[in-house]
Image (cartoon, rainbow, N blue to C red; front, top):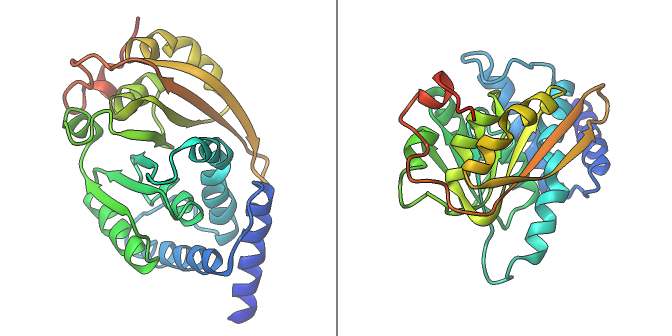
Length: 252
């Protein structure tokens, strides 16, 4: 059992070193606890389609950390007496929010997830990992994007959810502060999505600042990170009511 644990820790170390980060003993313990919790939940509810521990480490944990340099650049310019605020939209099993929170312990993190079974998992994960300044909210992005408590309240809005960029923009940009960023995790079809959505992103108050390409170690996978800066307020009409962004994606 200890041999297996040490092997998994070495895999996590390898992956995190590839992102340019160092892994403390506390972080390693949290990642192993998180991995074990995912595996135990898989027996009763579909938390993730990936089940192999090696693949969970690299295709989920390390992939979630592929944006760490982008976030750290913002953290370094943020006032030291304030905590940077992140929201993970459509968090699911806590990806990318939980791996990022493990590494960026001082950040404030909101894990937004609409499905009850996933929020039950997230609550247990946050408790077992002792993640401070981490809140789970069972709701939809269309709802909280209209709520004054959350609208334009976050420095960084993350989404690793599988949805077209125009849909993600309508979910995420209303939550982003002016001057903040949205990071969309995308695959190889990103170029077509950008071409089809650039006017939508601009209308929602954003501009595509850069596209980063990250090779995920121990896989053949390339992660494309679309960094969208919020430069003006999102019009009050957006997001539209529940289900409409996905059913009728914006197109200009």
